[in-house]
Image (cartoon, rainbow, N blue to C red; front, top):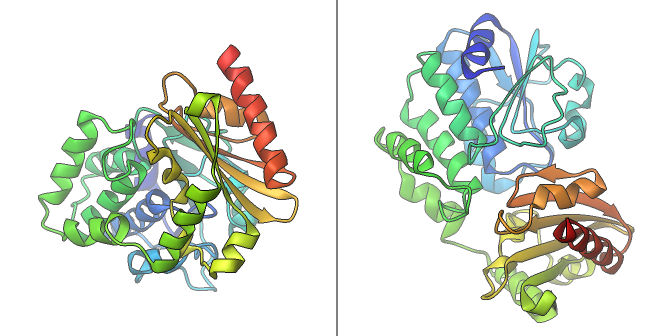
Length: 316
C-alpha cells in the first residue's frame, strides 16, 4: 500500500483503536499518540490502546489519548509493529482485525488487511509524517513533538547509521513548529538514573569480546536486575550502550526475560553484517543495523546460538 493509499484509508475509517508493540520504544509510542491526535483533528474518534509494557519515561506522551475500557472500535490500526507476535497481551484480541499497519521494518509480515511499509525510513515517524501531509493534517507543536521523539529515539538522537538527509529535513520541519526539543532530548539522551549507571558499569565489567574484539556480548541477567533493583525505565534502550566500545562493529545485548528465555538485541554497522538476517534464524527481525529475537536457554546458551548464527551469515 502506498502512502497515498494509506492516507485515503485513514480518511475513510472512524472509531479507531491504535495499537503499539510490546516493550514499546519511542517510535511506536510517538507514532501511536501522534496518529491519534491527527485523526481527532480530522473529526474522527480515535484512541490508543493502553500498553501494559509501557513505563514512566513515556507517560507524558500518552496524556489524553489512552482508550477507556469500554471503547469498542470499528477499525484497528497498528504502528511500528512488524508482526502479530510483537503485539502486547492486551492487543491479542484485536490481532486478526487490524485494518492497517504503518511500519518501517523490512521484516514486516503483512499480517494486516492493508500494510504501508517503507524500510528506507529511519523511523516509523518519518513515514507517518509523509502520510499526515497527504491528509492535510496540521502539524501542531504537540504532534510535532511526538513525531520528533519517535524519530530521535530510533536514530539515537540522529547518530545511528539509519539517519539520512531526509531524517534531518523532517526533524527540522518539526522543530520549526516551536515545541521544546531540548526537553525531549534531555529526557531521552542527556540524563540517566543512578541505577542505570550501575547497570552500565556491570555490563562493562562482565562483557565478552569475540572476533578479535570486533564483536561484543553483554548480559542483562535477572540476577543483575535484582541486585541493582532496576526497573524497565532504567533499562530503556540498554541495547545501544555496549556498541559504544571502541573497535566494536557488532554488539549483542542478551536480556534474560525469565529462566530459560532470553531476548537478544543485535546492533551492527548495517553493511558488513545484516542484523535482520541473523535474527531471522530465530524467528526475529528488524533492520540491517538493528534487529532482535528471542532464544530459549540460559544467557550463555543464547550467546553461543547467536554467535553461530552471526558466523553463518558472515560466511554467506
